[in-house]
Image (tube, rainbow over all chains, first blue to last red):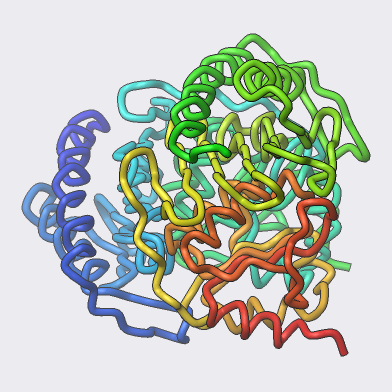
Length: 258
Length: 258
């Protein structure tokens, strides 16, 4: 059995250690490769940061299973003990083009149950962390549970291509909100929802994009599921909607399959 | 005749003075009204901040003409001396919903010629300022002239409704870029372009939205005109495109009227 606080004392150090590697690494110049398309980038810093986390996990928590964006992909359903989901740099396009608005994320599960989530806003040096029964913190300060705001009263974070193609009526959803925002990093978008700065966020995401943020969102009583109300399985990519309960229900209804 | 530095020494103090009024005013609770629609907001802080700037202008630069978002609207063509354009809170929706990602902006003209531009990122306490012959500064640090990046290599700031309606082929423009971003404040979008974090920004704007940013953009050799290449007249609302030269030409060509 693992203790949340014991794991947290270890993991929070890792973020402090990766920050200079990430920021100074970018200053030195990046090796950038395309993965599936010219808009899907990976850099040497993505790879080195994931390798760093994997080494730390192996040293401190031997026997763990790991699913990482840039490395081997274990299956949570075959993980007897600790299971880690790593997104070393979330928002790599922002990292490359802006040197800002990106995050580094880790999610921790034990026996298939969410234990801890971490979104690290690297540039601003703020660590958002928490888990079931703990609540959510920004560094040492606990975040209040966001108000259960209705769609019409909140800004909605969205995925650009889904907005342009009017995916499942998304444009109507935006028209009923207070406006769309596109920040280009799932981690940064989740932070906006956790802090009540956006009423929700909708995008097509992979497990490493949604795992950490979803653990935090659930700890703040936000709804986080597929558009059709299915639980996220930490195995599949899919359409993820995180929102206040009110906004979740309104959006899900507006986007319901015909 | 007015000296840029003499005006600057005065104006920069005004931003330091409005910061606590804006941030503490929001903490105390806002009076919010709709202007033209439920998405076009004005608060007591917008009005009080504009009033503050107008008082300071009248005291320090008597005989000035002023065009402000929330007050009287003088015409630059009938302004014999100093002409001021004020946007007390740019991105009022962000101000109300997020308490972040908004700006306070002032543009100064003398005998119809641009003299100084100011975009103040209130939350981060950074003042972007400059003018023709001065260059552009963030606080005391001069910004380099951004690289002349091509559209395909940069992120593009856009207006949400224009993106959704595919205004003049905008979706194709975004597809040829490295991606769309929506931040919800013209001032914040201009800052991204000035710093080279976005290759351009396109929106339908009023003079108070574009005046200050455009003075700064021109000082960094960026292109800032209507989509059809017309000069901004500081009188009309219209479609404003600020971008690197390369991206400006590519976007303008993709959006050319049939």
